Amino acid sequence: MPNILYDALKLNKKDERGDTLKKVLIANRGEIADRILRTCERLGIQTVVIYSEADKDLPYVNKATESVYIGAPPAQKSYMNHEAVLKAAKDAGADAIHPGYGFLSENAGFVNEVENRGLTFIGPDAKTIALMGDKVKARQTMSAAGVPVVPGSDGAVKNADDACVIAASIGYPVMLKASAGGGGIGMQRCSNEQQLVKAFASNQARAKAYFGSSEMFIEKAIDNGRHIEIQIFGDSKGNIVHLFERDCSVQRRNQKVIEESPSPFLSDKTRKAMTEAAVKAAEYVNYKNAGTIEFIVDENEQFYFLEMNTRLQVEHPVTEHQTGLDLVEWQIRVADGEALPLSQSDINYNGHSMEFRLYAEDPETYLPSPGPLSTFTYREMEGVRIDKGYSEGNSVTPFYDPMIAKIIVSDSNRARVIEKADAFFNTFKVEGIKTNIPLFQRLLESGEFKDGNYTTQILNKKKERLS
Image (cartoon, rainbow, N blue to C red; front, side, top):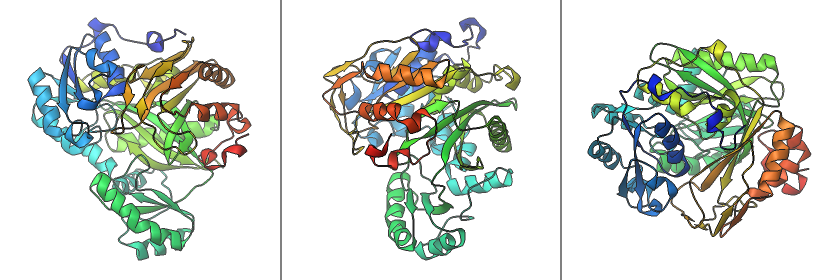
């Protein structure tokens, strides 16, 4: 494989694409903006990027056709400021807005505003985003679609007393979750009634602060499970396909750290059942553009719906390397009214791929570690792709998610990927801040991880037991 693996993707030629979308504003930052820029440039689409005061020196700012200052560092004053983003698009003469992932990517109100301005939103429609963004309604919808859901509350839980009654009926431990939540925010595992009562008010308040809604619900906690998601894609012609799975079970604070495909855990029978369930879920809501159906899978390979992410995922490069497809290109084509480029029978996957999310954080406490990247060097290797938002000399600020880069490692099989990743991280030198590279190295040397015999609890164990 080439070093920067975009060349290996099955890319359509520029002159095969319709030309309705000629200029795209990317409503995001860092490695996300840089990733979208790559595809737009190859397709001959002009680009507009936005940047806050904190990001003015990041590499992506000077790579687009145009760059627009959007506001002060806090996201609400810049990247989350609807009017500022829409004004930037209008002033630049953009035809469409690509939200990336995070920020405004799952904001149904913003989608309506985009479309009311006569612009194209590169993502699902507002109705689907609103429906699936509400975790309670999403559970009810998937249950109606015949997709198995985790045992739990039928709707929102009104108060701590009701929560305790429901928890007693399904049995502890339970997961208390924010209906409008995501990224592990407003979520807590509770082992008994005392913990649940204590957690209810604090998680309600956190959910209200982050998502504008204090609505909570409860699910049975599946402790020794695997977190596995299915990439799906739909178009405006009624076509829906899956692009196989990603295993996202290596997590800290309910947030993903490493993703891989294919899952070392799934049997072919379960993989088939899960992909069929994901397509059924997408068909039920008439899904368009890129999306992901997330499942929790127990030790007996019984799977349950967790949520639908109505956007491109951080870990989409894993699927790109497995299938040889450019998912950002597919997003643009579908948003431009085209049919999906391939049917299900034409989509295959090969080899093995892992993505490592490199964070500016303490590898022991997982707390953010902002600061200057005084040194940021590595040795390029065949089969290793790096999607990065920073360069040496840039500073990681405390205003945004502390992810610095994604390292995607691909090879013919899982053992070779692990060996290659371990060799790569031994060459990676970062100074000025702490990163989670030591955590990656411990995992890559762990027998539990090497054997593929791990669950979502792997990082909850004491680090000395990672062997």
